[in-house]
View 1 (spheres, chains in turn purple, green):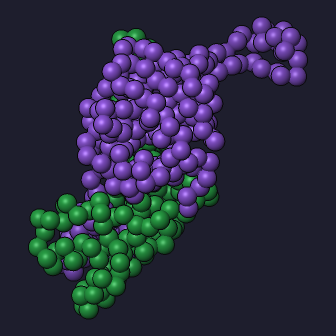
View 2 (spheres, rainbow over the protein chains, first blue to last red):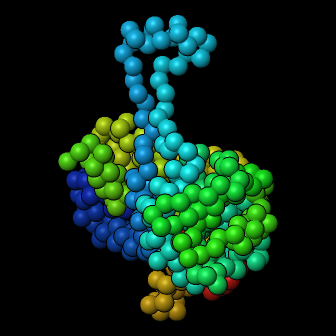
View 3 (cartoon, each protein chain N blue to C red):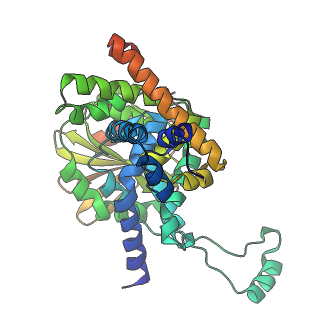
Amino acid sequence: MSMNFSEFKKLMGADPLNRDAETLRARHSSPEFEAVATEAEAFEEKLQAALHLNPPHDLLSQIKDISQQPVRQRSWIPLALAASLLVFVGAAGLVWKQSHQWDSVEAYVADHYSHDGSTVVAKAGENLPDQEIAEILARLDARADEQLSSIITFIKFCPTPDGRGAHMVVSTDQGPMTIIYMPKTQATDGEVVRFDQMHASLVNLEHGSAAVIGNQSQNVNSMVVMVRDALKTGFVDA
Amino acid sequence: MTIKTERTHRFNELAEAYSADLYRYAMWICGNDALAKDLVQETFLRAWRALDNLKDVAAAKSWLITILRREYARTFERKVPAFTDIEKVTIEDNDELKPDERTERDLLRKGILKLDSKYRDPLLLQVVFGHSCAEISEQLGISKSAVMTQLFRAREKLKTQLQKDGVTGNVHELF
């Protein structure tokens, strides 16, 4: 049974690009049907254009960065071995364990910076709008005060040993330095990590920690002091 | 190709194929640029960790949308985002339009943002991702006839809004 006009109109309103045989037959059955279809297509074109938004230029590269981090994979143990292991570990009942991504915060910092630290420094441009900085840090329950915000030239989410963190570049009178904020990772306060002609100083914060990274010619101490004072952590900026 | 390289290759293909549409979808459901980027990144982070569970490449798009929608639901439970950044994100593409076309598109965009989610969700899945009504039905867990009704009503509401505001030309009332 062929579609009546009301049915056809409803179909065009719900699925204007429908091209199945029955729809096409109905469309070509009369000028009235054809007009409804043409009008629906014109509206659809406007709708498609209205919904089309340009994604941020760095979104794809940031997503591809995700694949550079180690995968937490289950190490399955044969069932027979698992049964005896269950006895051994008792209440813990672990039949699998997640592999550590990094052995230590120090290893993570060195690994992370070696992966994209210099690329990110190169990407950093002029100062960012405070709003952009605030929005990203708020998602990590953190906030940078006005002084710190004013020198941040790049910020993005990044993986940390315990979830998501922020990778920032700050502009200082000694040149750009990098700050990695790890909201859920505790570090040994004041510890210095040296790698690839760079050095990082770890700062424990009220919640989580940060690494301030500079090259050999830079003294990161003043930035460590600023981060300790200016990076407020552990609240939700609604 | 090593397993790791192959895995990375698969992941990058998904990112190239779907990140832009997922961003658009995220923007239209949350209206906030930073949150949309965050949602898409979180979606791909979860996808990267669970990539081995994706056996059927044809199901990748729906799989990613499901991850994003779940993540959005979780986010929304924690914090209501500040609306809305659509205007900021769309300024560039409006520049080449004639004034009346720009007004119409702005009206349409504001109308889309004002749609109830039960109308907007299926519409976004259909127009942004090219989902069929059957796929939308499966994605949203509602019947195909309900999908058809909601899609029809969504468009009717937008057309009505466009005609109403087009007559008065009062675009600013919608902001």
